[in-house]
Length: 484
Image 1 (cartoon, rainbow, N blue to C red):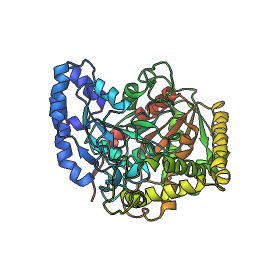
Image 2 (cartoon, rainbow, N blue to C red; image 1 turned 90 degrees about the vertical axis):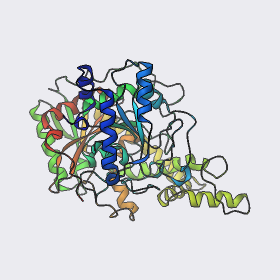
Image 3 (cartoon, one colour; image 1 turned 45 degrees about the vertical axis):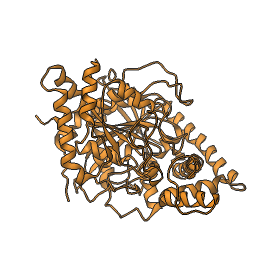
Image 4 (cartoon, rainbow, N blue to C red; image 1 turned 30 degrees about the horizontal axis):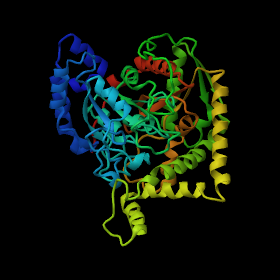
């Protein structure tokens, strides 16, 4: 038995049956990091005190079945006493003085934080090539990107360096890397999981979510992190749900809509073929699958980048070389501090988005761009609402292509932005989405499909995803090869 091959729910079962110990789990994952991190480059900060954390869990006698289970944390989620860098020179030495709400929940369960995971700087990117520190590699092929911006989280789970991880999703940053790395990525409904302690990129779009080996683990981890938080004014106050209870329901009669706009010319033929097999499988399982339309989908990408960049411009204004973060050593006056600290502290992609965001918010352009984008956002929400009157879930590709080679798109921002074309509309509407692996292409790179649910319909999409996963047996048939 190889511990790192087990899902979290399998680890829990073996702990209950006393087949393994917490110490064996922690040691197995520590050894795996020592073995694979040099190749994958998933971590910005590796916690050296995991044995001490485990000893504290044992001392406190935490009763949770998750006590002693390792986890990785995306490096834009605040962790008290541990660096939170957002993979940026601007926050290279920033140590958060408090824990994010999700970290308080993780710690209460007695999970072991194995470290902070690499990402595109301030979560701006789709390949994890825009990190200040390193370029994370895809465990399936080390010459390829893991996706982004939660690329470190996805790669660490796929490589078996942690059994699961937290990420954040602003326009597909959990789902797209999950698809590229052959794992499950869940972006919850906006407001279901507290954003308190998540370093903001675009506040109306950002959402913390999960990257896991399978759907059941996604439900277990969502149980931990979901819930109302008074520290987050956008947090939804809803009754607590056990998401694992809905997993094994029959999906016969489930109404699935397949928006035709997501199957146009930009979708790779092998990806399209894999999704068609998924549709056939759902029909076999008794679901009712029909083609539908999201007319507004063509405008979603432009709308997303206007709103996201505008909010980024506002949110990143705090990083000025005065209050905290990087401060230039090259200045003669206050204006120099502002200009040089931001010029030296931010990478090219972050600067690009700040400039674009400042432009669309500027006098004379606000109404033409930002205001219009917010109006289109309403249309996107209405279009989804209309479809959910007829369908329980919508099914699309997660990404138009499989993982691409490192360096092939990083110098072409427009091409990189198109990697989000299947995912951004879900964030605009605040809906939940899950990416599930459904096979590999001719180059043995993973392909994922996406299920989209109505607001707070996580139980429905988890149930549909679980039903497919049990039939496909992806994890049994395919494994990362670490090709060089």
